[in-house]
Length: 144
Image (cartoon, rainbow, N blue to C red; front, side, top):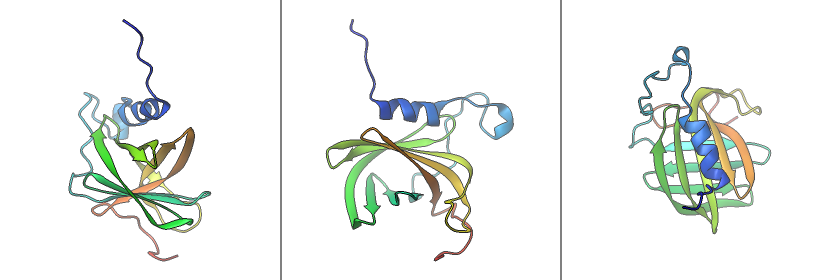
């Protein structure tokens, strides 16, 4: 049987969303699947330098950038690991993998504080950012 090689995006998600953590960080030491974000919650991931946003609602993602403000819609699959959750899909023919993990996050450009850390893997590029949901919003000025 030939060894199976996973794409980099799959490996990043596995490492970020499924790595067991110490019991002191709020993650179930017995490996309970991450359930802090309900399936009905809209999830938004944002980043700066370069600016980007991914909004996930149900099985659809909306990717926006300053150059594409209306955004591009694409199908996503959601999955949960031990320490967070992930989304995967194909954006303009390129694999996209996103992770959302608990942790205080700052976008570095405003006084906003976000409840999640976000990572996007897109065509060999890794983007770092922050995330929030409809039930777990960011705090700070809504329009800085």
